[in-house]
Image (cartoon, rainbow, N blue to C red; front, side, top):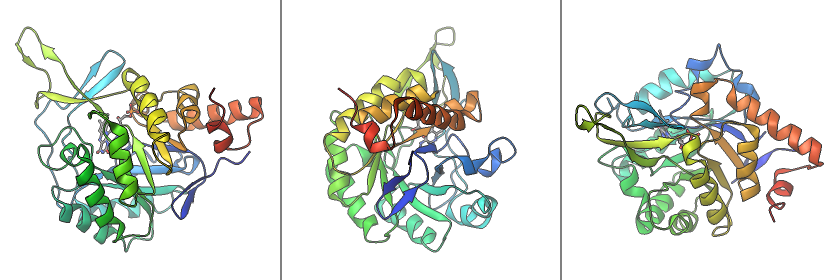
Amino acid sequence: MDLTVTIGKRSLKNPVGLASGTFGYGGEYESLVDLSAVGALYTKTITPAPRAGNECPRIIETPSGLLNSIGLANVGVEVYIKEKLPALKDADCAIVANISGETEDGFGSVIGSLEECERIWGYEVNVSCPNVSRGGIAFGTDPGVVEHLTSRLRRITEKPLIVKLTPNVTDICAIARAAEAGGADAVSCINTVVGMVIDTEKKRPVLGSGTGGLSGPAIRPVGVAAVYRVKRAVSIPVIGLGGIMTGDDALQYLLAGAAAVQIGTATFVDPSAAIKVLQGIESYCRREGIKSIPELNALLE
Ligand SMILES: Cc1cc2nc3c(=O)[nH]c(=O)nc-3n(C[C@H](O)[C@H](O)[C@H](O)COP(=O)(O)O)c2cc1C
């Protein structure tokens, strides 16, 4: 069985990754999870300067999911390079830096700073955060903007460039095609789905910022459908995520056409969820006599 995945000019040793923002910068989980078991760690979104994030409360549980509005709180690219990346020096998995900015220049400057870091395998461009007023989803809802931004970033790097899509649009396929036209090596879908919870006693939204992004099993059918549609709209690999808790959940994405998957909210329930997901995929492939991910992709009737 060969579960390697090729994205752009590089490959991942297996299709399971840890989703951005749900595994910190990686080092935090060192004593709990063997990072060498997963194919990739997508680190928390990094912006040019540090960000404090949104007003609290920023995360609440909902039926079958989480609603969060972190607001891209992060240490900024300088501290990321000086303190966070070195902590990952022994992790034998691909480190994908998830990046964002308030302007095209901002996105470009983060990648520009990270290009020197050999440890970075590639980039995931977050044009899909629903919880910030500038940047984030504002970039990811307009095909023209996505194509322009992607082609600009393409000129800065030869490393794998993955554009992370939002489901909060009329036609996610149009945005995926724009990323492909701009030169993206892959797209990942989906980021969180806009949601809101209201406290009926206080008569106000529970989250400090009002609305937030829904993740977890509640959004899995949305993610699987997005991957199924996007896979048929583009020729580049599609990375699937949204509500994957088990190997079987990941297999739905792989059958829908995903080249790889990411595990997010499940890690909050069980820090080693991603490793169990990988084991589930492997045992399914062994049982069904499947030798590779493309073979899996072709099986859906
Ligand atoms: C608490 C939290 C923080 C997140 N932060 C980020 C982030 O910084 N950048 C990003 O691209 N996605 C972020 N996400 C979105 C996840 O990477 C993922 O796209 C989404 O949660 C769906 O996957 P899941 O249902 O497996 O969690 C965050 C999600 C959660 C729950």
